[in-house]
Image (cartoon, rainbow, N blue to C red; front, side, top):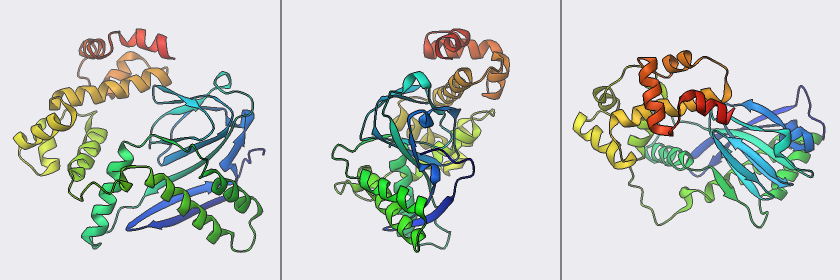
Length: 290
């Protein structure tokens, strides 16, 4: 199936219990052979890659993952990934769709808000699913047919198929663990993820983080320590280092530019922190990973 330069595009909203998810698919949902090759890029949405046949490797962030039939990867928003010519083998085929949870309106019920928070919490740790019995594969195959042929009622059919696919994926996440109660710290963790993702480039303090969570500085410090095993400053530095690693791997920008954009106040401090975390200098890391 040759990739289309201007593919027919389907975007729909699926409803799963108290959750709404925007899902996107197009004619290029299915790729085979060299069509699977992709240079380094990222997306603003989650992306699902389901490998139906073949083998090789896919690089997500700084991790090389095995490509094997039945392997499904959930690539997170803004997470860089690629598949090289040398990292795929003959017979490879894959399906891909993108999605994004829809935040409930302020007027929504607490049940809907809790369901959304729990979904975000589950997705934050969901990266890999193994479909050993190929239960999901037939629905991807039918989805390709519906999008390609676009017969009467195809939008309704694609919505139903995407609903099933997303349901199966979420069933394999923590959302289907009935032993867990509704009580969780997801609200704090969602706020924590958002804070570090948005503020790591700025000169922020524990007090800024506490205000984001609307708690005391002492409580904010306990949340960080409990969930990450480190202090606020250590978590902030780790976040900056992880972003610097992505830049070093996927860009040719100077070390000084990367240090400044990742929130380090001086180039020397960047070198020191980076070496403490990785055991090598930024230049050495770039040489080993680019």
